[in-house]
Length: 155
Image (cartoon, rainbow, N blue to C red; front, side):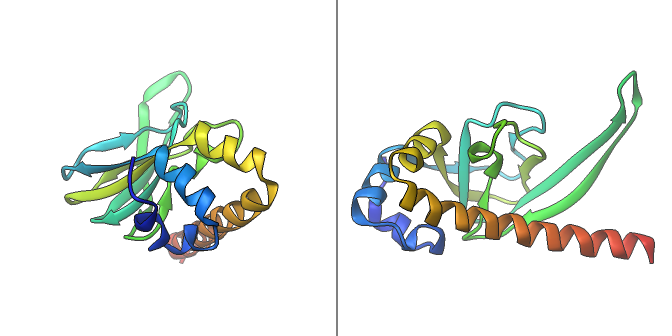
């Protein structure tokens, strides 16, 4: 458990009321992660949502032919900076991580139980709307970054 005041510092949580902040604080822990640690891998069940406090997290996507593992390539697809959500697949069906994420430097993050967040959103659709608007914003920012990378690769 963390303090609701810690959550209030971040725009993603700033529009939630005190009860929602307390509920999310109860299912959140603050973690310290050494550089190079893998937080989760593409294809895993998405059990946690994260918010980066300090440090940096790299997102990667792997590509390989199903029956030819030697064709595996890993592509960088983004970087998470302090104040940003990641692991957002944890609140989007089918709740499977779509990228791998590892720290590029010593980092501190909030690790939030995804099932708990989904229950809060289900119990209060208004809070769910506010929270999912922030998730949608994060998705759109990543999509824009990916489009830029794709355009640069084709240039």
